[in-house]
Image (cartoon, rainbow, N blue to C red):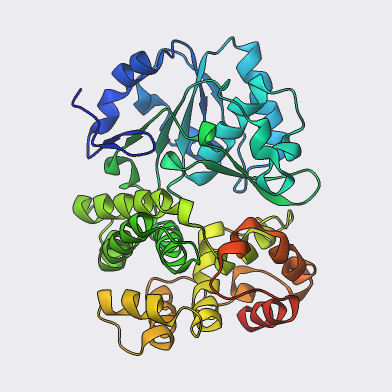
Length: 374
C-alpha cells in the first residue's frame, strides 16, 4: 500500500484501483470483524462482494435519507455480530448512517440529543469504533467530513457534528462510480458543487478552507458534464470525487441557505426527495437571494469558471447546467407539493447551516424563495 494521498482531517487512499488497499487499511485501523453498512441497491449490485471480505456482517437497510430507526437497527446488528469496526459503503446516506451507528454502539444517549443544534457535540467522545468510509458517489464528501445527517423520529433532519465522527480512513476509488447512472451522477455532482459554492461564500473567515472550496468548484464545474455524459471517463470521475472531497474539507467554513432549506424538505418522510437534486433546484434561487451580500465571492466564482454577469450570471448558468444534465428545475418537477413546504422556512431558521449564510435569514424571505422554487 502506498502512503495516503491525503492527510488533512483523515487519511485518504485516493485513485483508481485504491479499493485494493482495503485489507491493509483494516489492519492499520485495527478492524478484524467489520460491519458493512450499505443500501439494498448496492448489495444487490454486488458492491459488497467487491470488498473481498470473508462473510462480513452486513446491514443494508439504509433508506435514501438515513433515519434514526435504521441507525438503531444497525447498532443492534453491530452488537449481535460482535463487530469491532465499521465499513460505510455507498453514497452519503450509508456513510452518514455508518457514522451514527458507530456512535450509538458506544454512547448511552438518545440519538437526537447528540445533534449539533441540541448542543450534542459536547456529548460525543472518542469512544467510537473505527470507521472506514468507501464512497460510491461523488457528492457529499462525507468520507472526510465530521457530520452525519439523520432524519430523526421526531420528523427533524438534524446534523450530528463532532471531530470524533470523522472516518478513521477513507478509500476513494473513482472506479466505484463508473456504474453510477447519469441522473444520479448529475445530482450528486451538483451536491458537491453546492458545498464548494456555499462554503466559499459563507460569512466565516477561513481563507484556507476558502481556497480549497474555490479549487473544488472549478474542478466540479469543468468535469461534471463529462462525468454525466461519458460515464466511463475515469479522469472526469476522478475529478468529481476530488471536488466532493474538497467541498467537505471546506465544511468547517460553514454552509448556507441551500442546505438550510434542503435539510428540512429532505426530511419529508413520504417523499424521500434526493438531497443533491434539492440542492440543484435551490442553487440559482439562493445565489440571487445572496447576491448583494456575497457580490465579491460570487463574482470570484463566476470569473473562475468563465461566467459573466457575476451573481445573476452564475444563477442562470446553474439553471442551464442542471437543465442540460436532465435534472428537474423546480420542486414540483421532483414530486413535491405546496403542502410539503409547511414549516420548512421556520425549520431553516433553526438549521445550523443558515447561521453562516452571507445574508441574514428571515422567515418571510425564505418562504418566498421556497415558493419561487416550487
